[in-house]
Every structure is written in structure tokens, then in C-alpha cells.
Length: 270
Image (cartoon, rainbow, N blue to C red; front, side, top):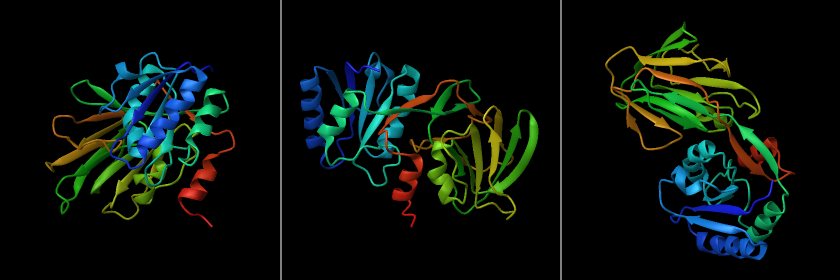
């Protein structure tokens, strides 16, 4: 794919981003590529419209904030990590100019990642690259959550909350809550209860074609977060309908970097 128009999304709260921006500007200028600089937040679809690719400078949180508009506009993403872990922002900050020049020359691998489509009771929807989290807002109280899969009863969970994760998102909150790691190429949805009252209530892996419905079985005050975005009041938004979205997000990654390279490095496997 030829990149002639590159969007650059910058998280100005991260230290050292100005040097990165200058390096990207210089590399695109040398290559004759149009650069669209965006540092307003949140990033909307119009900002990315017409771009051949988008470079995100920041951490994984910044990357997640751009995932939905990028997927809806069909714009591939790649990231330069200025955060902590950098599971998604795969390019290092050490030699930004060389990374940008290699990408503009077509030296990358494309990976399509599944998204979750979250439909609310009012008919609106949003997309998640990592996860959807439904939790009790009172940290000292459990909630009761009913889960149905394709209309069939799965379980009623007594727990602090539920995590619904994509394969990409299994290395995030899902992993911290004891859920499994899943290869991002798998077509599945992972449900992991948070501190379930019944110890046998463990993660369930659903086929990617499954349509899930999540509702509350009591009057607990619930909060809802999608990809770590600011928590919403869940009352009035339930039941949630969750399924694999029809659109996917394309990531541009170094050809020599595999998913397991990232896991070994970021999770400090021996």
C-alpha cells in the first residue's frame, strides 16, 4: 500500500513527544508525503478521513482512543510508544526517522484485529479494541449479572464486575483478573468475571460469531467503561448487546515482530 497522506495523532501530555513530531515531519517531508497533525482530543472520524495511515504518538491508552474512528474510516494504525507497556504501539522511540522511512517505503506487516461492537439499550453503539468492563461503582458491594449467548442462558454471576475482551485485549485487564491470553488472530470473545463469589466461575471463551447480552439482576449502581474511556453510568444503558463487529482495525507492525515477541518482552517472560 502506498502512503501519500499520513495522519499524526500526538498525546502532548507525554514527555519527549516534540522530538518525535519533528522527526516524523522531517521524514514525511523528505518522502513528499502530506502530514496531518492532530493533537486535539478526542480524535473524531473527520480528522482521519482520507488518510492512508495514522501514526499515534503516546501510550496504549492514546492508541485505544484512536482505534474506533480509525476502524470506521478504514485507516490503518501504527504507534510510537511514549507510554509504559506499549503492547499496541509497536515502534520504539529510539530511531523514529528510520521507522517512519521504512513504513513509508512499505516495509511493514498488516494485521487485522477484531473489535467488539457494544450496543446499548437506546440503540446507540460503540467499538472496543481491548475490552468492555461492567462494574459495581460501590467497591464494597457485589453485583448480579445475567449473561445470555445467542438467547440461551449462560449464568448469573455474583461478582464485582465482568470483563468482555477481544483477543487483542486479553493481555490487559482480562489477564490481571486471571483470564487467559489469546492469540490476536483467534475469532473469539472472552468473558472474565471480576472477583466472582463462586470460585468455579472462571473465564468463558465464546465463538466470535456469538451475540451476548448482559443485564443487571439487582439494583446495584454500575459503571461501564469501553477501552478504558471515562466511565459511564450503566443504568439506562442495559441490557448490553455485545458481538464481534463487522469492521476490523488494521495495524501496521514491523515485519520481524511477532505477538509472542511482544509478550515475552512486555510480560518479562524468562
